[in-house]
Image (cartoon, rainbow, N blue to C red; front, side, top):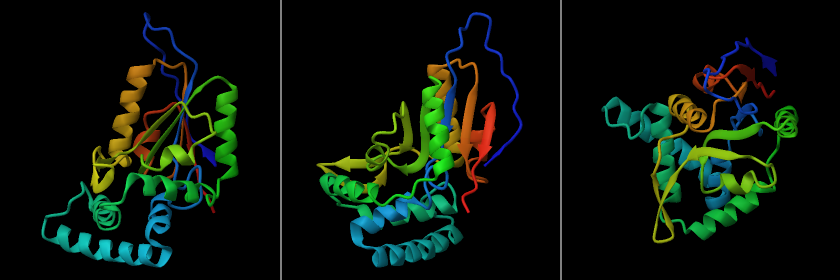
Length: 217
């Protein structure tokens, strides 16, 4: 990990700063790999998950060429197509069971995990901000003493996933918007930290005082 530049942002004269806050990306920052594809693999099997991803890539490409991509950008469209084709109709209980299986298979990245624990010991607020889904993230974070989770919400109807999102896709600009709103609602903070990977977390990191770019080799 490499620490980038640090600039102080004093609070207003009437504001009493709280202890600091640290924001962590999840995929490629706290863990090795992409939890979404791993979760889909727990639901439908690894081979089918990779075939579904390839199909989503083709479909999203065709839709974007016609100006009909379902996401705000190409990667968002791939995600939207993949979720619709693999999770639509999945009982919420089955999603939670898949999350439990996935929790035992995660490969945590030691330096980022230790940084999270250090912030907790220092009395700072810890927030995970991730494009991963809210149907499985609480299970994966269990026991980490995370204060809040900003994740991509999945729509549920009659106890089943519809395959559609009920929030914005919590990545890039959307993630930065949600982190900014969280700070406004819970701050001010004497100092803020951000842990993420480039380039996807650059908008979030730009908001924070201390920026840590995580490179998992």
